[in-house]
Image (cartoon, rainbow, N blue to C red; front, top):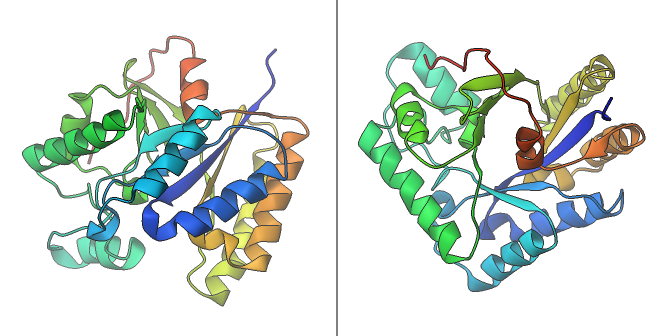
Length: 253
């Protein structure tokens, strides 16, 4: 039997978070020389391009990291409708659920613009992950029309070329304030123990996770323990290793 896998994913990779992303990547290198998946945002919150950042992104890819597309602006510019939608888009995601309420045409335009950006850098992204893992019905349709092999939602990795999915709850932290950090450390410790026998563990990190010593100790410990028995790989490598499946894909809401 093949060894279980560990996929480490770094979110919000953009010029605004470049220093934090470099620190995250360096901290991961200290645990071992293994590839990670970098979720790159073309125009984070409307920010312009940065040639030096783009060179760094290409250097990481040349060293073996995967670069996947992570939205376009990472900002939800739409208007929430109703209490539940407002809670989801303004509180839970803090206004960053970019692909939750886009029309088919708007989603297609942003996906294509993101692909064009990465391809102009010589990168060929196999995956797309929406900000906050939220993909609305029309954006889902648009995504299926593009040349991506996979996407991720909160609890699943979707194999787009097979129309199937793999269940996997990610290890993810909240760094907004002290009590959220405390709660997420406790939650991730319990989740890591429950995943001990799982085929795949997803450790998904955000730039702010490097700034707090308590969070850093937690995710570094989880990664170090996982690496004793798991083989680290990128999301794309995991998806490419999957046999043909017949399970139904995620049905958008």
